[in-house]
Image (spheres, rainbow, N blue to C red):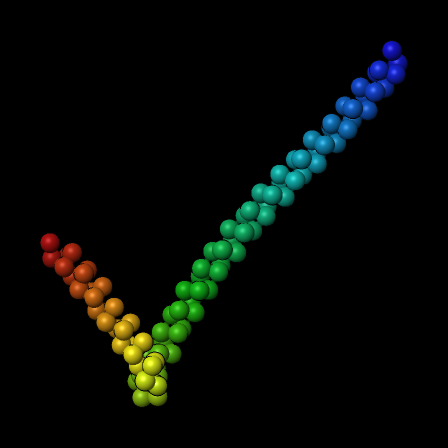
Length: 95
């Protein structure tokens, strides 16, 4: 009977150890998930900043006349897209 009690105690202690490890892994997983969320947000912010800076570079190049022909076409395409979006907004506001 003592052997069975010892065996049950060993199984119980191993189970307790596994539960502690599981809880630690859950906390680590939550911490890592939060870290991933923060990194994604940071990446989105940096991507938006890069885009904004690229637009400023294009505008500056355009203003001083140092754009190559392909860059001019891309720039004109962006301007046309902005104009279309502004027209849509004006149309929606006038309704």
